[in-house]
View 1 (cartoon, helix red, strand yellow):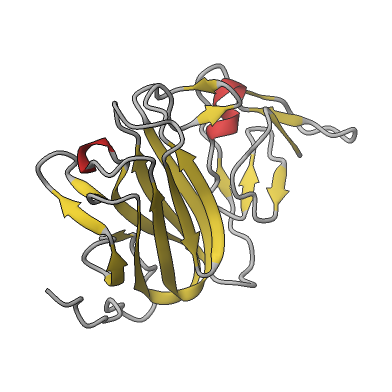
View 2 (tube, rainbow, N blue to C red):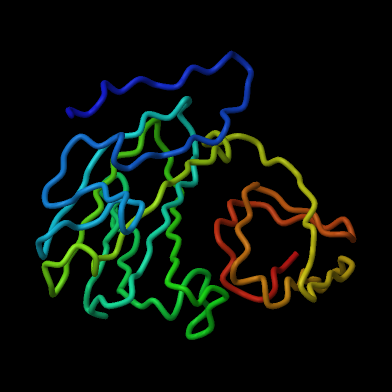
Length: 224
């Protein structure tokens, strides 16, 4: 069937935009060589070919900063050279290889998920998401191809808005230390590399504040 007519989700005045589910197949505006497979993968995958893509547009309920997530799945029996590439609003986000023994989140060679589930995320500042998801494979067998699941867009603020303040909940061996003139730190432990901070300012237990758009933490401690 043809793609549906795009309609921006309704949003009442003064209401924070709620998370929006993204149906990559249902919101597509074009595709080639890709199918929606409910028998084997329960997702969108490359069909009986070696290359393909799906592209579409997601209108956000409000202009602003949105963090967009997409789940990508590796499969047993596929070649490690097979790949899925993600592009959001013209910018390459990430390319995943078919490795069912690893998964998201990973820090170098250590992965918390070891069943081939991966997640890409990107911060998009716009009133819409234009996406292109491309497949490349060494074989033409659908059941051996990687696939994608549903996605989600989460509103994280308006560009230029004053920072808000939130409190970090620490876990998995994380610790905090009081502020000091020499600079204290919030140590998130082993979970730090996988922590996503969705606010523009964070306050630790000692009352110190980190300002700025933190995005995804890539270290084990944050300066305050």
